[in-house]
Image: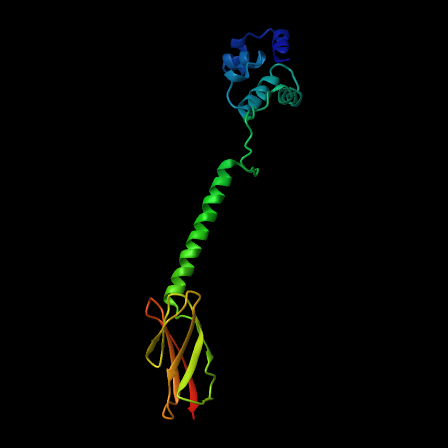
Length: 200
């Protein structure tokens, strides 16, 4: 449209450059739609507006045509769209979860064992009962504890079975007023149970 109007006005590129102060190379690039040889779109819009007046064109129409024909900016299209946000189960994920599960179980077991090691041992005394009357010269003492725990009854060592059970007869007299059972773990932690008795 600009080129046709310039032809009708019989203006050369040099003539139009002189009138509009727009370089001939830019005028030629606009006429031939060589957008890559032109400055940014805002400047090209100004060129078209300034060229329209001496060529007898309506500047609004000329700018509308430019906006219609001017190529839009090319969008950078990724041929391989990012799908990393989508969850997908993979062998690597399976391996990682497996390793994590093993570590959790291992550290859980070690933590449990350490807790058991530093905690006082469990001790249950089933006999004698509190304030039990003992008839005779011996008293039967039995109960349960944990494995690898040392048991003593009134300072006498007692054998503990593999399942933590213990049983022993100890000598008593009318002067014996108490049965003292102690359980000592490998870490030296102690649990003590005392039973008051009466010996007849």
